[in-house]
Length: 340
Ligand SMILES: *[C@@H]1O[C@H](CO)[C@@H](O)[C@H](O)[C@H]1NC(C)=O
Ligand SMILES: *[C@@H]1O[C@H](CO)[C@@H](O)[C@H](O)[C@H]1NC(C)=O
Image (cartoon, rainbow, N blue to C red; front, side, top):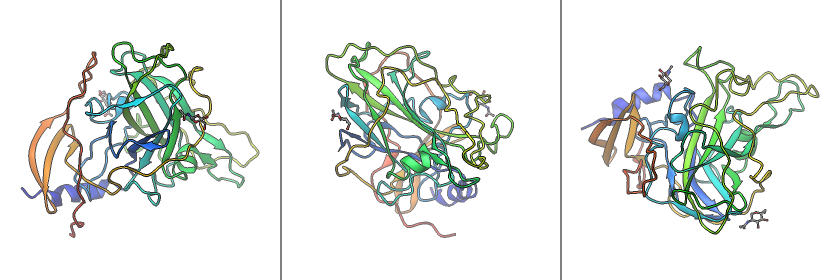
C-alpha cells in the first residue's frame, strides 16, 4: 500500500513546532551501550523522513507523561549499572552526531531525571537530578541560560546523572526505570488546559537499568506520573521570553519535588568514547496517530502496512522479564525524501 505521501503531507503541516527530541543512546562511565538499546523510544507519528515524533506530551493527566507514548512497552535489553556509575544520556533530534541541533534553540526549559523501580507504582518516581534556569541574561530581555538549550544542546545532547551511592538492587527485580525529561517552554506562557494549541512540551523518555552489587540504600517515597505536575505549577506555565533586566532576581521554579538527598547533588560531564551503532536517522516501523498504532515495513520509499491496532497504555503492576517487542526503529538508511 502506498501510504507515505498522505501521512507525510498531514505530518508536514503540523510538525513545525515540535522538537522531536529523545534519547538515542546511553553511555555508562563513558562507554556507549548502543544506539536505542534499553531505551523505550517514543513512537513516531509517521514514517521518516517526513514523519514527526509525537514525543512532546502536553496533557498533564495523560499516562503518556510517565514514559511517553509506548513507554509501557519493555525493550528487550536492560543496562547493568553499579551505584556510583556515571550515566550520560545522549539526546538528539535528527541524528546522533555532534552536528545535530539536539533541540530547537527556542526551546528553553529545565531538564530532570527521576528513578523508579520497574514497573513504577504509586509515588515511586524519585527525582535524582534537575537543572533549570542556571544563569540570568546579561542583556535586557535575554533568555538567560537554560538546561535544555544552553547546557544539554550545547554539550552535544549529553545529560549527566550518577547512579545513587549504595543503591540497592530493586526489591522485586533488580530493575529500575530512569525517567529522563526535557521540558520545552517556548509555548509555555499559555496553559495547555486553556489552549490546546500551546502549553509546555514535556519530553519524558525512559531507560531500563539493572542495579547490581550489594548496595542497601532504598529509594524513598517519590511522586507519580501523571500526578506530579499541575497546570498551576509556576514552572509549568512560564514565559521564558520577557525576563526582566538583570540584576533583577528572576527565578524559575523547576516542576516536581525536590531532588532526593541520597542523589548526587552535582554531576560532572565525563568524557565519552565512540558511539556504538547507527548515528543517522532511521525509518520508523511503528507510529501512532490518534491512538492507532501502525506497524510497517519499507520497500524503497514506500511504507507497507503490516498491521494496525488500537493503543492503550498497559502498565503492568508486576515486573516482567523483558521479551523482544516490536521495535520502533528499523535499522536501515532512510529513503530519499518524497517530493510533492
Ligand atoms: C488528557 O488526558 C486525560 C486522561 O487520559 C483525558 O481524559 C483528557 O481528555 C485529556 N485532555 C485533553 C485535552 O486531551
Ligand atoms: C563518576 O564521575 C566522578 C566525577 O568525575 C568520578 O569521581 C567517579 O570516579 C566516576 N565514577 C565511576 C564509576 O567511574
